[in-house]
Amino acid sequence: MGESKLFSVFMVIFYAILLFLVIVNKNMLAMYMMAIGMLLEAIVNAFGVFKK
Figure 1 (cartoon, rainbow, N blue to C red):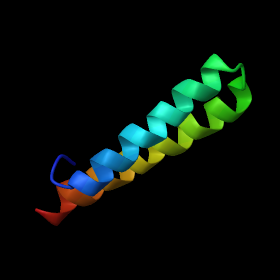
Figure 2: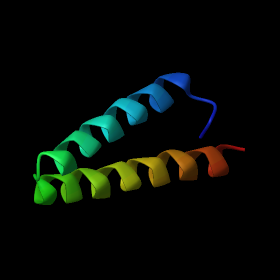
Figure 3: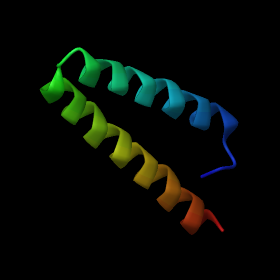
Figure 4: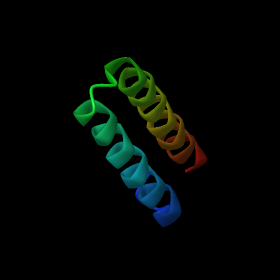
């Protein structure tokens, strides 16, 4: 997963937006974003494992 710099930058921005949503008390939207982010990371990681 650490091979893609573009994906890593995207996830940092994604989680920064997620943190902002928690700060402004948009917790349900933040939960959806957290689930999507975790799923994306798992999919990218799975592709990396099975690609080798």
